[in-house]
Length: 344
Ligand code: KG4
Ligand code: ZN
Image 1 (cartoon, rainbow, N blue to C red):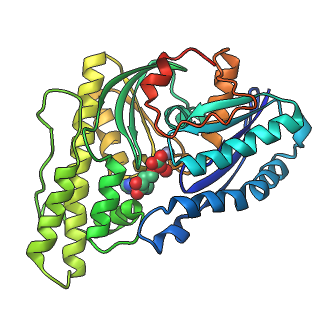
Image 2 (cartoon, rainbow, N blue to C red):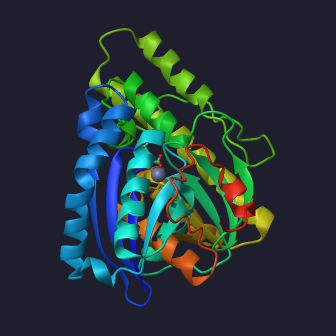
Image 3 (cartoon, helix red, strand yellow):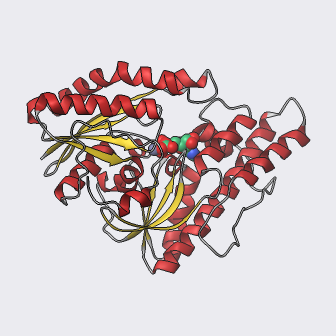
């Protein structure tokens, strides 16, 4: 079974081909980051228009790389939500039109399910059940994942998402949007423990997070410093921010493993690309005897491969949400709501 995946929920356009027997055949991606950086954040209307420009060339690229042609596709999976309404509509309309032309079904995929399942694309995939730490620009959640569509929310952020806190703190330190990856590069040049920032909700006793206070602590540090910020200050402040973030994510993940009795942790979403987070989790995994899995770096941030994979797995398990002919986007869509829903 050959599934085409289309991702267009935010500022990345992704198209991929996933084969149920052979695995991922190809993927093509275009990031709009440079376009939005000028405005300091994603401009929804520009995002939608750019998705329109990119989808057909990316489809050609994905087909070309895989050596496949359109009639060979068995289903078209696309991101139904959550995300920007206009951006989602572009991907949905593209997928629905293509499916009508090919006389094949469409499968509506939850973007976070794509992230959750993305480590299954790696050469050493995790087996169910596992604890998932989902850390992206819009979400921070700990989940118990027992199988495709079988998710239990263990905890989540009460305010900012981890990636959002990275981006906002990066902005405070003068970095362009999105500051997450740049902040982590800056942190590598910083000296550990020069500044000690708060670890929000570390001892809350539950698995929830809160990161807006951490961002405010960076703001206070920056204000105390006054202009202009020296490179050394910026690197040390980035380091302090990252240390606080990593410690909270680590401790809560360890608690989730203990609470569920599971020995496998999967880290997904853009922040999962963070080197310090990975190094810390890897060494703690050795110490506490659990396994930690990550998606390949290319599949940490948004991409079409995870959507094609999720669509294919849903199709195989008979739980695909087939939305043929409807513009069924869902910009606000809690993952747990979807997990409870019956297939369309
Ligand atoms: O999963 P993703 O591509 O998009 C969402 O679905 O939100 O995640 C993007 C987020 C951004 O906030 C970005 O700054 C952050 O992931 N990010 C990182 C790193 N690479 C991307 N944060 C920390 N360290 C990184 N290396
Ligand atoms: Zn994402």
